[in-house]
Image 1 (cartoon, rainbow, N blue to C red):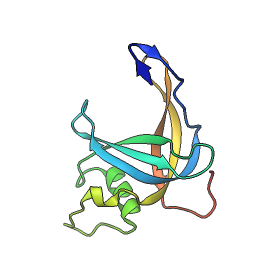
Image 2: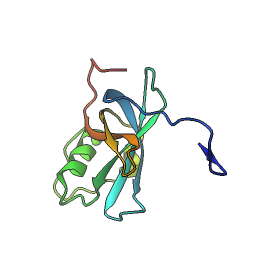
Image 3: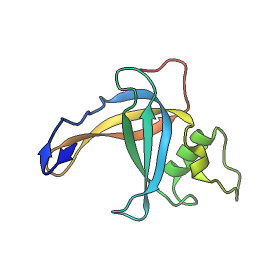
Image 4: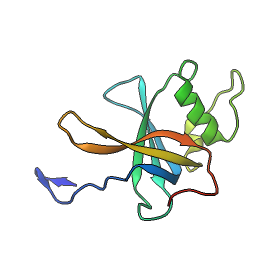
Length: 124
């Protein structure tokens, strides 16, 4: 959190691994209009309530990662020509795979690299 340029608390960096999560948000990234920023909230364990984001290209007909994520969140394969209101998927469960990346200035942040269908045995 930042107030008048003063950092009040260290941001929480979710460790790399897999986590049970729910889809929290899908928004177009303001910095790069072709990207979609997808937020997931961790459901349980030490990092319960923390939100981690992933980026996908948002062209559903051309991009396998975005289509794969939508299929997993929907719980079924998209039919040819099927329209999906992604806002209806908010709250759906999946397992997120979190990894770490570095920003230009060396700051480490957690990012969702991939998602898989919810499984029985997973890290909390």
